[in-house]
Image (cartoon, rainbow, N blue to C red; front, side, top):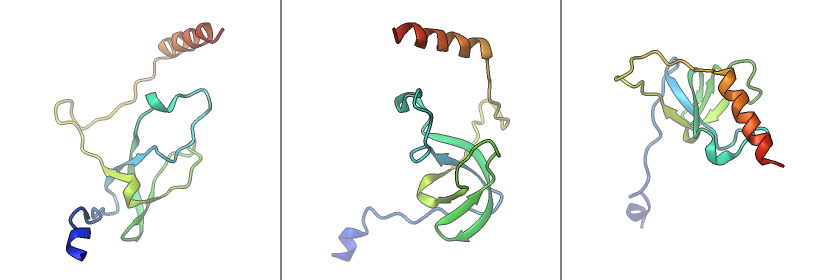
Length: 110
């Protein structure tokens, strides 16, 4: 019986302090005007700053994110940079594109 129960059991990944991980967005509350269907499933990469036990890790989150910085290992995913584009990850913010999206949303809401 134990053997059957453990067939689908996987060991928790072993993360070290300083590793880059992605945080699952499942429990992150976003503003009401955001549709969860179109949001990212993971946010990051964030650096692990502290290790509490085998299943709880503390991340270095930016100060503008107002969430608790301790995560269970099941909500973390190892960050693997895309080798095709290099190791630098940049967030592109285009205010013009964002304004156009807001206009479309406002026009469709009437």
